[in-house]
Amino acid sequence: MAQRVPISVRVNGTTREAMVEPRLLLVHFLREELGLTGTHIGCDTSNCSACAVLMDGKAVKSCTVLAVQADGRDVLTVEGLAKGNKLHPVQKAFLAKHGLQCGFCTPGMLMSAYALLKENRHPTEEEIRMGISGNICRCTGYAKIVESVDQAARSRNWE
Amino acid sequence: MIPSSFDYASPKTLSEAVSLLASRGEGAKVIAGGQSLIPLLKLRLASPDLLVDISRIPGLNHIETSGEFLKIGALTRMTEVEASELIRKWYPIVHDASVLIGDPLVRNLGTLGGNISHGDPNNDMPAVMLALGAEFIATGPAGERAIRARDFFTDTFTVSLSHDEILTEIHVPMCTPRSAGCYLKLEQKVADFATAGVAVQVRMGRGGECEEVGVGLTAVGPTAIEARKAEDWLRGRKPSDKLAVQEFASLAAEESRPVTDIRGTAAYKRQVVGLLAARALRKACERVRGA
Image 1: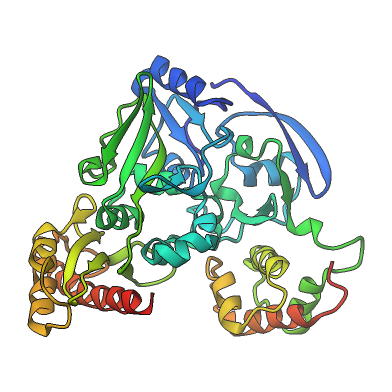
Image 2: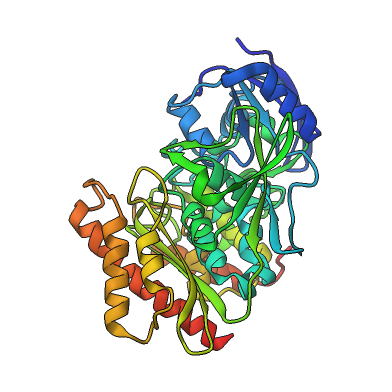
């Protein structure tokens, strides 16, 4: 077995240190080592982005990042969106606009939507569709998801 | 899916990275963004003994003009290529490809150097670099050498880098007046491999003729293909001449070597190449006029 290496990753604002095998994927580190199971494994083949998290502010597929690559970086998972019991405006908008059916893709959709709106607070519908074009919803509930992101873009109190 | 076991090193300098590669032989593999390599590791189509992560080496992420070249650091992320005003204005063909690669999440991590050095005939930047007549700077134990794009892609997943060399910089010849290009690809859905893709770069003469032309093809052969017969045909001819463009398109189609697969038959893909070649040429000419 390969030698474990030390990593230090800031996850949802808290620094987490661990010794990991180099082959450990970020998604497994989050789910299994840290117990953050909000990040879902959908396809496991880099296609669906149910596992999307933000790394240094950019949306990435955590099934296609090694935990060692996240060393020294800042990771935000879906658990980091809400402040205590107060849902983030993006989450509220998905709730209000029925942006989910089975809910499996939702954590990834939320993170891609959050990443998009962080850089572009007033996206057009086209920009919303491009922004979530890497995320697959197999319920095909895209119309409501696009509406949800649009609703989130209109909400005030965005941090 | 879990990759087979490997060691990991994250060198802070280029020379350290090169020595690691040299000392571990063929078993060592470079990783940058990992967006092509990690899926292969998970499928165990690749099982290196050592990953050398070059992403923390400074000085390999830049987009600048210098001397005769636009110089792009190999670690430049696709999103950074996409956002570059310099590229959008002067090298629209590169911008075209940058927004068509993978999906937004892949582009946030995927690097230009990785898209090229992976040697995947389905990747978009190789065809663009062939059309532009780019050169790649490889850094190894003996220092740097330049490799022309047309000498770089030797076979599927095989490029002319030796195991201890790292692609460090991409040199695109400086954009001259009256030149522009366009990259088009047909894909069934976002992040799918192309059914076919065509890159066309032209430099127009004052009389409306093509002084220089470069054509690269994606996903229709064992490597990205430079369509040299189509290039030679168009040189000196006018894109306003419909018959000349038709011949250009059919030559490009002839030079493609597609195989029948889930994305279409070989004959269909050849037609797509011809169609995209004509469209990309038209768009490139429009851009020259608009510039």
